[in-house]
Structure formats: structure tokens, C-alpha cells
Amino acid sequence: MVRFLGGLLLIGLILVGTAFAFGLVKVQQTQTATTPKIAVQPGTLPEYKADVVKVKVGTKDETVKVPTVDVEKPE
Image (cartoon, rainbow, N blue to C red; front, top):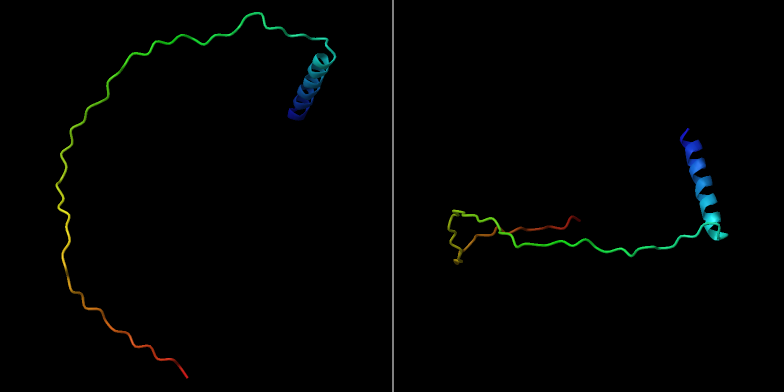
């Protein structure tokens, strides 16, 4: 059924295209298009109040013990 409808649609498009190609159908613009007039009024943004935690960021020198690793190659 879907194949049949698709075939009919294809035949219809071919017929319309052929009619345009041979000049059997002529389309003329009778009125120019215009964009709609839209008035924009300024709006307002929402306001927010947030209580956040204060974070202190800094650096300090620290000595870290790093283990040593011995690697022996197998013979």
C-alpha cells in the first residue's frame, strides 16, 4: 500500500515537472511578500540572591616522603 502511494506521488511529481518544463503551467508573482511588523519592548531579567560559602585559596610548602623502588632485571 505504501509502495503504491509512493508510486502515485512520484508519477504526480513527474507530471507536474513535465507541465512546467513544456510551459503548460506558468506561475507569476502577483504580490510581493513583506515581513510582519513586530514591536519589541524591553523586558527585565530575573534577580537572584545567593548565599555562598567563602573559600580561602592559598599555597604552603610541604615535605612528602616518597618511597624508593628498586628494579632488578631478570637474567
